[in-house]
Image (cartoon, rainbow, N blue to C red; front, side):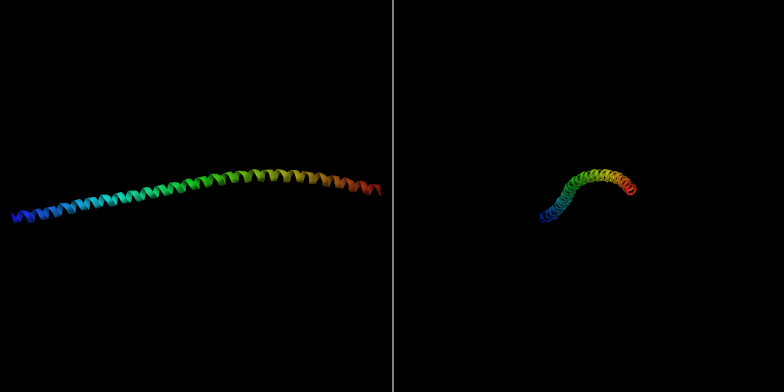
Length: 100
């Protein structure tokens, strides 16, 4: 009988050790999965923020390009007016010289 009690103690210890090891392994695996899910969640949020910033910056670039095109068009108009004024000034100088 004593042998059975001792043997059952060893068997019980072994079984509880195996069960504990399996539970610990599962717990560690679940912890790793939770950490990975948190990391994915954080990266997804950061990605969303960055995408919204990219869209905002793209809109700003489009606006700056429009302004640049308007400024170039204005500069071209000013250059044409300047050329016309130079030609007119030249004609006026020639008239003044002829009338002297």
